[in-house]
Amino acid sequence: MIDPKILRQATSRVAANLLRRGFQFDTEEYLGLEERRKHLQVETQQLQSERNASAKSVGKAKAQGEDIEPLLAAVKNMGDRLAASETALQEVQTGLRDIELGLPNLLDDSVPDGVDENDNTEIRRWGEATQFDFVARDHVELGEALGMLDFDAASRISGSRFTIVQGPLARLQRALIQFMLDTHTGEHGYEEMYVPYLVHAEALVGTGNLPKFEQDLFKTDTEIPYYLIPTAEVPLTNLARDEIFEASQLPRRLVAHTPCFRSEAGSYGKDTRGILRQHQFEKVELVQFVEAGQSMAALEELTGHAEIILQKLELPYRVVALCAGDVGFGSAKTYDIEVWLPGQDKYREISSCSNYNDFQARRMMARCRNPDTGKPELIHTLNGSGIAAGRALIAVMENYQDADGSIRVPVVLQPYMGGVEILAA
RNA sequence: GGAGAGAUGGCUGAGUGGUCGAAAGCGCUCCCCUGCUAAGGGAGUAAGGGCUAAUACCCCUUCGAGGGUUCGAAUCCCUCUCUCUCCGCCA
Image (cartoon, rainbow, N blue to C red; front, side, top):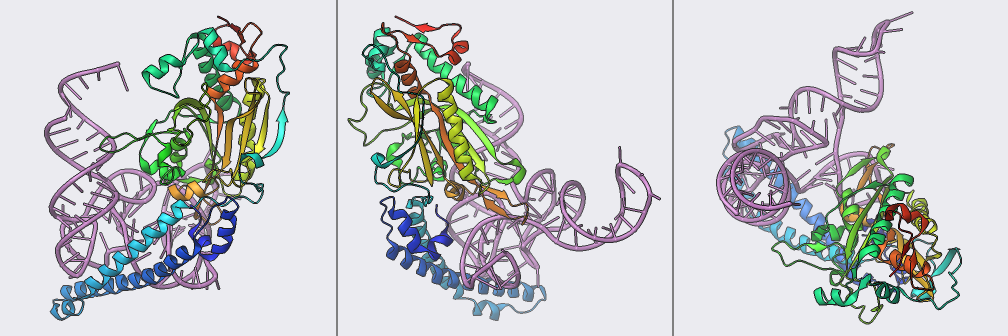
């Protein structure tokens, strides 16, 4: 959520910023409601104040044994006026909140202009696109030939966009996850967390997934609905909900491995081959809580933490800064890390690192006590994939393939593979 | 799944219709005293919001959440959620 104060004091500036995303902010509607809100709120609070004063005087008179009937008569109609005013106010406030919850975050000034992924800016590259002296196979071909990826079985069990990973390849995915967790906890100062995979709606409102993106989520039809998490960002970031941290507790760095569940509504026909885009995939997620003012530096740092995973795996990648039109709803600035996939002969997203500044913090009341003023202030939240394990598995398969279709195990993963160095049929 | 108890400020814990946003203690902050790794005295110490140039006044809201009764609700009524204890079941 954008700071309501900024919203009402600098409405046109906000609208101009959001327009960079291609988002049309109806300022007329907003300002109209805001004007009504102000009027109604002042009026309601005035009536409440009168109500309180008269109730107090009734109590006082009664305590002194005076006749309270005249007093009661005097305030008789006040209740109705107050109730009407309160109802009207609440309606307007609900309307305003709906608008505010639907507004994307303000973009940071450093975000490049552009409308879609074609306008993203490459920041840096690491490594050289892998070359083979044979025709590179993609992970589907490799996995099926090895007998370690089974799409038919998965579709019989669950339908499309699911996969069965078998044997050593399943272990390789687990090795990737273990390796990532160990690296982030051991070398980057993150605390490992185990978190719920089912959350209630409020948690998703906090991160910005609701109310706008319900169609992307899986939802249970239990009496109290649960949503399957689309990313560990949701439970991890919500750990800051209603908290007031001491400055000494920040920055707080959290990491969790979870499965992620996405309905992929609206992505029909896109990436239908292989395990690139699944309803269920494994991911190691990084989240940071930092003081306002620290978040841009933290974004660089967090992105670096994700990059190191790829460097240690010796997988070539590039980092791109998402352009204004491609930055996600709640993010102020996002870097994507794209790994080289020989099977597709291009770079594909394997991590997305975002600075949400106070956007999520405001929705979930996540604060930190300013040591100078003693007052609570909103923290900034960041998150990034560190990294997507399913896609990392693809990247390892395709970059480490040999002419005979076998797959070498990256050196850093070998300790996690019980000495296995090659996956072969 | 069955039975019972509970949910109050950073913590413990009073408060069953009227100056209660809330006693007391602990903790914390500041000041005073004190020649010693301590004790004593005093003051202060919730969050959100409105108004505003203002982090100044003033005002509103909040005692798990949501409704209701009332001139007035932490206190009474209803619904829900969560926590704890016991029984059953279970990984």
